[in-house]
Image (tube, rainbow over all chains, first blue to last red; front, side, top):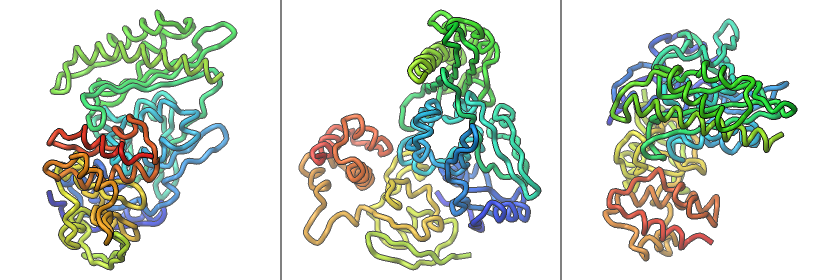
Length: 294
Length: 152
């Protein structure tokens, strides 16, 4: 398969990248890991005359700590994230998402910013970003803005990034004590498959009363975008963190919080059933972690 | 417009003019004539085009040649020395881990990269280490045995 002809630009700073974007506007694409973009170009699903490579913009591929939160650069690869001590220790659901994306060849190139901008409902890192309440950091030549990740996705393959904007990274608040999170994906073959259903859950409990004080659940592959499960989350508030509450939350998520479709990967009914099971399991593991970390 | 890039492939440095829409796989095969790197799916699913780029295995069909500017690359041709095959290649021959041979360069490079980073991988780690390389002769068992025989 041949790639169409294009001009290749290689800026060294975000500012330079934004200037290029301002010049070429819709007729340009940012290239991060390339594991989706180059495939889409080869298959002629998209076309562009200008590729703006971000691999030389060094500030974008780092993980930094900043008063109560961690900033993950948009061009950080899955492999980098998986081997980062702060991600391993504080953001286990995100690590699980990174470990489950494609195979190691893909993970060495694929970036978290690319995964978000590609905005697939099945994206492996996206449910984790949702349950950690990440903020997407967007920049244009005028300045910066940060928007909650739950407002970031607007449809399959679509996000709220404006034409002359760039996603520079994510701000993830460091989870409090007595909290835990987990992610499970279900696909046909682990190494290279688009998920049938993928679920992440975050749980914080009060150890003195043994009740849940915060719950966030995110569902992938069951709606046009990755979504939160607000009704299931509400049902957990004030509950004792135990199997029966997790099961009930799974049932609500399956019934009220998702709207899957039938396709060749699975039927809508199967997906709903799996939302129930995976919600229950991610919550149970999140609670186990919350106990072991406190 | 062509761009001049510099890269080191198997300890040899090259200065080459490439079109921006040429992938690293095509550069290696068609401009440099190193046809040990195979092209299967061309979409990053099969791993036949695996090369080691700056110490990490990648699908060279999903890297633009211009992106590899300044990089150090190892292809299957770089493994054998004047003395003969690389021990890992010997092990593949010994264990009968090669049938049609199309996936072998990619599998061997993935295995070499795994063993370089982790000289005594567990069974699970070996399986994960080659999970990006598809073999359609159903030869995974012997491939696994060949890699296991080289772990310390």
